[in-house]
Amino acid sequence: MKPYFIGVAGPSCAGKSFLAEHLAGKLDAALFHLDSYYRELDHLSLVQRAHYNFDSPEALDSALLLEHAHHLSRGETIHRPVYDFTTHTRTGETRPLEPHTFVIVEGLFALHWEVLRKLQGTKVFVDLGEELCLERRIERDIRERGRTRESVLEQYNTTVVPMARQYVYPTRNHADIVVTGDDDITHEVESVMEHIRRGASRQA
Image (tube, rainbow, N blue to C red; front, side, top):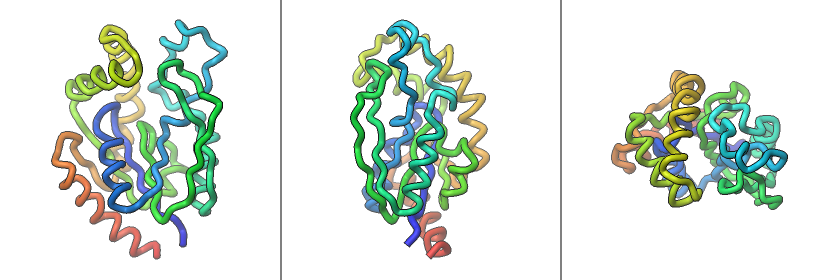
């Protein structure tokens, strides 16, 4: 049976991962996180890495992620890179992701590349105001990525918001469903599940 792909896109810290994880639990789906595919930056100094634009599609190894997405669509196991956000480099390790009936593609640019969108039976955009996204981003990056509040604010204003307006928000137009990242998660999941049921029945 051909895997059914679900794309979950939206701005940074809108609630994409939270929604994707709940959907994965509901569907027993494979989670294909695009954050694993940031480019290797070990050729740059730590200072240069800290000022790198991570919020443009070019920051991702699109050739590898699209190759892996196509492998999953054919029911083949992939070996994803492991990215360390504290050093902005790949660890050298890989993690296997086996094929599933459902595959959730989650990340800023999940709806950016046309070839990736064509694999997706359900396309979701998680929307949330920039102020709430910033609050969540500060809390997450300090807790999980060893950043300071000042560095988070600088990055947010320099690249995160401008790149989201240029590349992420326009992909909302490709979505089948738009949900709000501070809505009740049960309601969000059910809204998406309803579309998945219809799409999966047509694909079967």
